[in-house]
Each structure stands twice: as C-alpha cells, then as structure tokens.
Length: 270
Image (cartoon, rainbow, N blue to C red; front, side, top):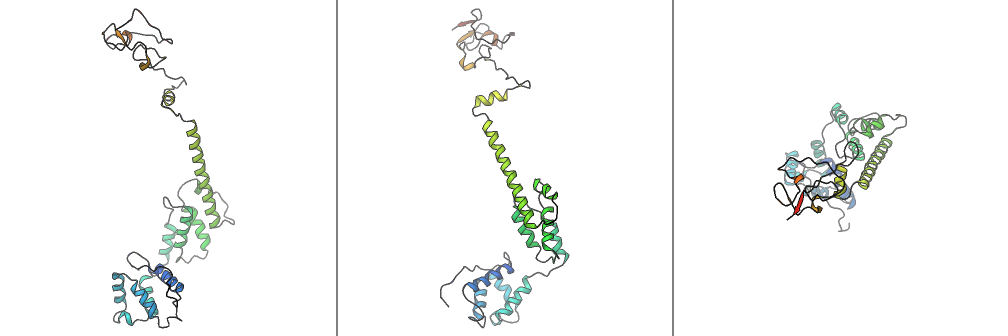
C-alpha cells in the first residue's frame, strides 16, 4: 500500500459528535486509503486508527464498555458492535413520528434546507409512503406567508416533494424580486436634496406647499439668511435683525404678501 494518506481523519468526541456520522466518515477514510479486510485481515490496524482518533473522554468510555476485557484485546468488528449498541438509540415508534409531525420551518431556513431536515426526521418513522408524508409535512410546516397560501390551493394529483420545493423557491424568488423592484422605484422618485425633502414634508392636505415666513421681514418669498432687511433695526425694540412687524415684543398683525418690498416708515438702517 502507498505511504501517501488520503483524506483527514478528525478525532471523535461523543459529547459533541454522533457516532453514526463518524462511523461513516472513518469507513470512507479506510476506503480512500485501501484499508480493508484484505489488507488488514485481523482488523488490528483499523482498530488502532479508530482508538487513536478518540478523545480522552471517549476512549475512557470505550474501555468501560468492553470490561472486563482490555480494549486492545477486543476484535475490531466486536468493538464496532459495542459502539453501535451504545450510541445508536433504540427506535420508540410514535416518538419518531411525533418529532416529524411537530417540526416546523425555522426562521432563516431555506425551503431546500427545510425539506432536507424533514427527510432526515423520517429515518425511523417507517412510513409506508415517505414521499407523500414529506410533501404534506413540507407544506403544512412552512412559515406563514404567500408560499404556504399558494401551495394550499394546489391539486395533490402528481404533486411531489420536489415539485412543491421548486414552487416554494420560485414564489420566494418572485416575492424578493418584487420587493427589490418596489424599493428601486421608490428610490428613483425620492427627493435627492434637503430642500426637496423640505418641500414635500410641507405639503398640506389640500396639496399646496406651506409657506415659511422670513424671520426678519415676514415675507414668504425668501429665507431669513437672504433677507435684505437683515441689517435693519427694529423701531420697537431697537435691536438689529428684524422689522417691527416681526418683533416679539409687540402685537403686530401682518397680512402675508407675495412680493418683497421696503416700508420706509417701518425700517431704518443702523
């Protein structure tokens, strides 16, 4: 056999890993490296590789399982049997089916992932028609939404799990595309400057834009920062920066005007 080793064999910790999965992986490792009954008729090499891959806690467990024998004296196949008996839970009938029927699609779980998880739950359910059970539970266990509502309206004739998964994925993609399209359209018509946003925010129920008075003169056709009366002194309080009609120290009634003009009787420059 070549000295080149293929694949990576990680350690096995029964507290964080399942024996069934690890057993399958180590079998593939042996296959890749041509380690079998012909090249290892006694099984000593395979046993040594397995035992050396166990964590300390798992190795201690294995030695306890084979007592009163020493683990090095137990044949490889017998060791596998002991591990299978210990780590493989016995099927409890309806308990397995309960887990299957109680399952629901989780948040963030794709439709394909949901279907794959369901299939794994059927391993010990002994359904007479696995595909039918999977199809029904896939639809019934979907999260509430458009996909579930649409699938509920479909005829069961010739409707397989593969078809309902495809339909759900297509509906989900279509919904996501519609949301993205709506968002792009909203961005296209959204105001791009603060002034535009200000104008839209001030649209009243009648559809007209609310006028904002200049704090200096009271007119609505310009901003306070642009008012040509900004350096005038109020005749009431004698403070520069506003006209008498905008003074807070006097009750002054002003009718809005559309054109800007200077009232010589009301203002004087400092």
